[in-house]
Every structure is written in C-alpha cells, then in structure tokens.
Amino acid sequence: MNPNMIRLYDYHCWANGKVLDHLRTLPEEVFRKEVELGFRSVADVIGHIAAADEVWLTRLQGSSPAGLVSKAFASVEEAGDWMARTESQFREWIVSADDDRFVTYRNTKGTEFRNTAAEIVQHLVNHGTYHRGNVTTILRFLGHPGVQTDYIAFVRR
Image (cartoon, rainbow, N blue to C red; front, side, top):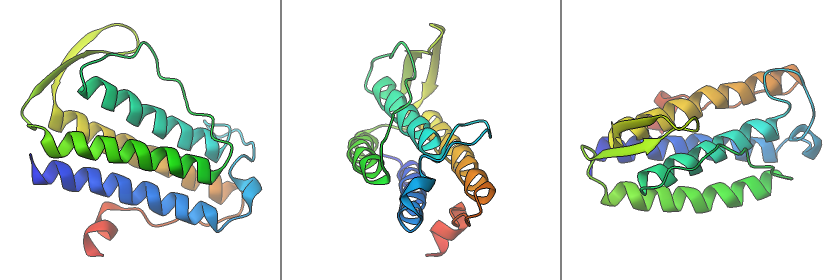
C-alpha cells in the first residue's frame, strides 16, 4: 500500500464530491442542459468520468472491458450515489494493492498494455482533473461559476 497513491485517489474523490456538491446548489436543469463544448452536457462529462473510473477499476481487478460506455445519469443524486459505490470499491482495492504490481490489460481497441497500479491511479486522477475542467467550462458557458478543485486546495484543507 502506497500512501501517495491513496492520497491521490482521495484527492480524486474529494474533487468529484466538490463538483457534485456544487451542482446540487445550481438549478436542476443545469445538469442536463445541452451545449456544444466537446461534451453535450455536464451530465455527459460526469457520466464519462464515472465510466472511466469503472473501466480502470475493472482492469485493476484483472478484466479488460471491451468498451467505455458513458453512464447516463438522470440527476446529480444518481451520479453521486453511483460514484460513492465505485469510489468505495476502488479505495478498497488501492488499500490492499502493491503500487509496484504490474497490471496487464487491453484497451478498448484491443491493444495490450502493462502498467503499474501507481501509474494507473495517477492516470485516473489526471483524467478526472481534465474532465472536471470540462465541467467548469460548461458551467461558465451557462452563466454559473465553477468550483475550486485544484490539488493544492485539497492538501490545504
């Protein structure tokens, strides 16, 4: 168990939670409001983050899903419930993992790769950070503020 890997994953969960908490303060229609900004809506971005988290957990557990199917959440609450369950399973895996352990998996195109658990967790965290930025872009486009989810805000709390 690598404390840095756990800390990074805890940051990812904290940041996702901050975004979901912020979305709960906005009018309900903001979550599904359609835009043309790379993703069709905030719901689509959150669904993509959730699907990627699920795919990486499945890979770490020894399987290789054939595809990445975005989650179609109808509400912020539904997204939050799903993410809480997945985060719990993911954290359980991380706590018992050897960060130097190699994981062999196939990507969605069928190409085989081999990475350490720590590299995969780092990727997952970076991926989430990138897409939380997409959420902020959409929110600002719709006239709403984003929320602070930078790593430094996590460590300062």
